[in-house]
Image: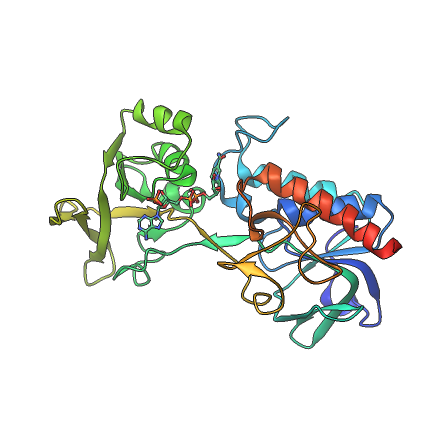
Length: 321
Ligand code: NAP
């Protein structure tokens, strides 16, 4: 199957599995459910493939190629789902009904009904919450290196954060930048050692450690040219200014926050992450969660795909009881 039109959906149709979220977890669940002979729909508000669409390279998915772009991987994943009877619907969920034997996903006045539901909505970038961040979004400030990196050819780029995303995307941004400075609030990194070592060897990368971004500022016509940073150990703050006529880029990778607002009061969560057991079962019977939305240790495409597979198989077992 493939993408289906909203108006082609019959409200009386009862799917075996309704999956919310079309990233690696949701699409993997869709593939496993369809292969088990279940009727299944995957609903996604953005790009099918999920956040991985915006990742420069997929280097650690077993069997993948180190040089494959995230967008290519996301498209392969979607194409794979399309080789099975997986309905895909583009649209934003406005609510869910999880209690009762029939689970309902609401998209405005449209209801998509299922005997089981898999929540795989993932996470979205965390904002720094500093002055200027919203004002300069899309005009110097970005949360996506693949999307916006090419706009900063020959410029100085700042990257905020010290996790895998910050370090990996900083290396990617050296393709475009004159110089990339990683601004991190500690002197130790959350990112994998190998990534940090790789970045340290890159002559275009500099580190501004024990330092936080305090303010993002610029010219009256909206060019980002001023970055105020503060050393958290000394309390000293300073303003870094672009050369006259030049401007900066700031890419923020300060972690992710779970996309669970619509479910948080309906099942058990911890800091917004949905609690599940090893079978991906949530606190509500017939409702499963998979991928980054779950409370778990390792949030990777491969663990999301594995969660999705387990959730689909467990949904099948739930319906057999
Ligand atoms: P992350 O691991 O949560 O790292 C977030 C970083 O942002 C941390 O260094 C944190 O500093 C910093 N930070 C958070 N809030 C901040 C604030 N208000 N001001 C300044 N700095 C702030 O997030 P991520 O790098 O996006 O990774 C998310 C998940 O995806 C992780 O599980 C990661 O392993 C995975 N991932 C994996 C790969 C890969 O395997 N290649 C690539 C990308 C992402 P502290 O360290 O001081 O807390």
